[in-house]
Image 1 (spheres, one colour):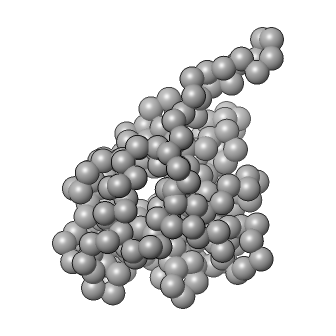
Image 2 (tube, helix red, strand yellow):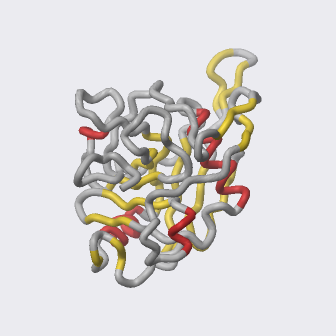
Length: 216
């Protein structure tokens, strides 16, 4: 499985609303982080994207979302009291046996925070961003990977319990950087995690209709 939440993994702290722009010191204005609105066939939820502290990972997600990459993809792995995994292009077919193994095409995208150019390579992978010590708490969005360094791409998971053993700064093998947190509709995420499954794949497909970015 593409998510080294080893074995059982394949890969919300409590809702926190994004704050408006605030002046940190004279002449310096820090903008609120962008938000993403996820429209699924089971309802909608919103998340703050941590562009301020994981700019590569957040910019990668924003670029893919704005391009429509995620539209029509299904949640391919959901486990109650654990997480919901999403973002594999093969999961446009909800029953594909390749779901969980795919990523985005190689290419470049803009780092929204720095204005620089970032790269997806070797199967659409981005650089690991082990910079911010945000823990894999309930409601957080975290990057899936193969277990090897620098193997995150388009797949991520939404934690529905305390999964701090997956933190990149934990002593364990799994290293999954958090890049966002659900601020509205967490109940939808929990409901998705509890649907009937076969081998963790929802029996009734759950599709992402769209992801809309605001503030970036």
